[in-house]
Image 1 (cartoon, helix red, strand yellow):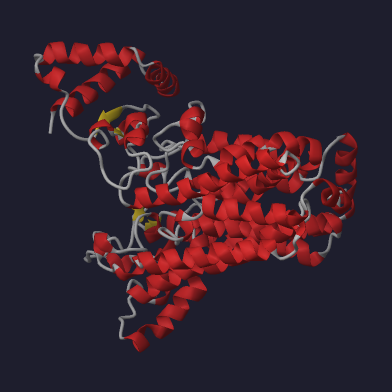
Image 2: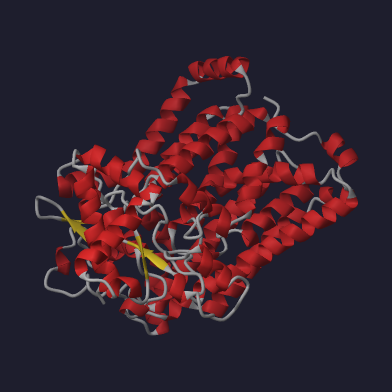
Length: 541
């Protein structure tokens, strides 16, 4: 399969600037230096106490918990937490199972990735006069820079991946746009220990290996690819969707599919090696679940009242809402999606699997009960897809490189502005000028490109009702103040007023219908329940 760019064509049709060989390496250095500068300016590893802890907080508490449990407390059962305030201090979060055991809520993939850096910090802690408790600043410092370590490997691999399809200049621009113009920047610095920069790195390496395997199938690439895929899924189980581009990348027509099936038949032992490597990575997790829950596969999130609503995906909200829309807070990804058009003409063997993967990814992620994915800047779970989205983005830049000089200048200025916008809005988010889950159109434009709060920002924020959201019903309330009009009414009039307005919300009525269908409950009773909750939230402190 021919999947490399035509160098002679590129040199003739694209300005020679785009063929300077060292530009991609320079782009990677710029990105990493900028990230380092941000880290040392922000210094989020310095906060170590409870809610003020800068790195090991929120989801990271669970991702990280396996390491102090095993290496410090020597008790993966978490019995050492009995009679302590470790849970209240935000050091260990767990789910209590029906058999009375405690289970860490997330899979252990991130602990595998953290482990070398945790052990280094554990060795060095006494040298810096810090306690070996797993939560001092040195542990957090090493976690932050573990993200940059993996990211450097990922960017290097992505450079080699993109260089198969695009000349050096296109590759460099694509890397800069991804590194500085997307929320990869936020999740490699301000919340570096979250899963997303790690997944970005692992996916970049994986697909470089996958392409090499299809070119020359061998045991080494089978083993490494299976191991990496298993680790990626262990970090974020939804990334099992990557099996689509893994299996179908390079297939442009039925003849390609027939050739692929023959290749697989010839190399069945190598496919089995891939599967075995995947299974080996997952074995410790399955053993852990079986030991403490009695089940080989255990999902702790439903126990916490969370899950997917596949019959009620919020795709438009996921993509374009001001609350957390992917294209709103990372508009460069809208350009990447637009790049599927030139990609279709350039590499159909990439177009079909990447479009299928992207559509399924958006559908699955937008079906999660909290489609805004809690805190964090922008639509964070999509960062895992950025190595693959880099390909249509590169195709779009290639197409733009063929335009007139004036058009290229305008496009360059637009992309520069999008990089600036991403960096500035990252600053806004870190300053709570972009709220973590309550943004509205009015609030967004009130503080657009402003570094200080303005009247109208807080007044127009609306937060979700999390209890209803877990049912797949989405109602949003003002964050501050009561509804003055409701306060002037008696209770009966107020409830009727709320009910009247809820009935006008088509999206909410759709949510209620789908919830009623799933749970076999009466729609009107459900609507009354929602109206009652809304009335109380709008009139009580």
